Image (tube, rainbow, N blue to C red; front, side, top):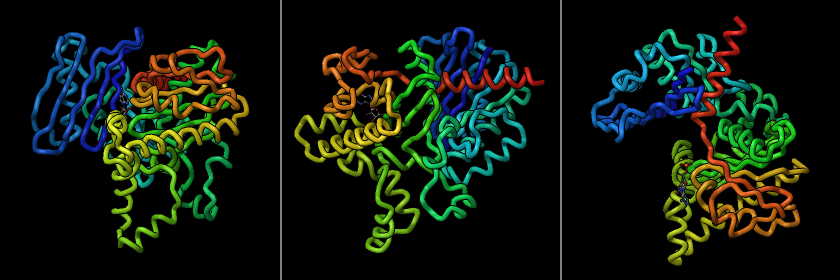
Length: 397
Ligand code: AMP
């Protein structure tokens, strides 16, 4: 089976084409600055030694998909986009859906109806789906939702303590995000530990520019740090994570800020960047090494928040088989992992500094709770889920 995975942003399309039998990437690429006077294209395939790069106007997502289609045909990987076995789309907000869905008119309408819950991401995801449908009208298209894995949370974990009827009417609840990544690393960790996922309790930490934690009991998510939107929870590159909601009204009164300005402030100017001027953890660490106190504060805050969530999730899980780190920071920053897990021996968590420095998965035999580094692969997980939904649907028919 050949499955194309598409991740559409408001001005970008990222894609990977998988041969599912060998779990092999046949081609991949990134199309950026869609809608701007000059867009950027970077395409790779097993037939090219060097990436193919281009600068040209890419007015719409439809033009972006046409570029991908021509590249795959010219590289002789496929005869036409319509010959693919499936196209899997990353869709950020899935509302009530607890698994991926084969896209038909009803599902498309549901995705459109969820737009107010993800006003930045949903229109881009919809544009990507519509463009792919035009270019490949006979190929099954599957929506893989970032929120679906977290739908197993119990009501006492996902309900906010606000007027209940208002929450029901406006669909206000904790949804959680990065679900595809949390699911993928939990499955990989169960293989590493040689224990069925249905018997595993994990704390998963996706630490990239966006960061989130999840508590997984017997293979199912029972709580996660992101909420109605991806703003809640851990400290992120430019997002504040948890804060006292009264700060919003205080800012409104004192700085005369409008709601969208506060939205921007919390999403784009806060987190690591808000504290020390950069959202890139490598730069935070470099600044810290040269004695920058704000960078040290940002780093300490970042790790302290992770540690608090580890403690909270340890309490609700009771028994924890492993803490799993992933994402650009989780996979590469030994110091973040060390600082977040040290001095937790009373919880059965022992981190070995030397082994941790290797940035690879290591099983610390003295530690009751294993600490694992598992590189995430959201694209492969989307491809696997797309294949599963297409096969399930063809059996049902
Ligand atoms: P992601 O969103 O998963 O691509 O992760 C981006 C984050 O990972 C940025 O904050 C990067 O600074 C961080 N990152 C990437 N490589 C490293 C590294 N070698 N050491 C520390 N942080 C890193």
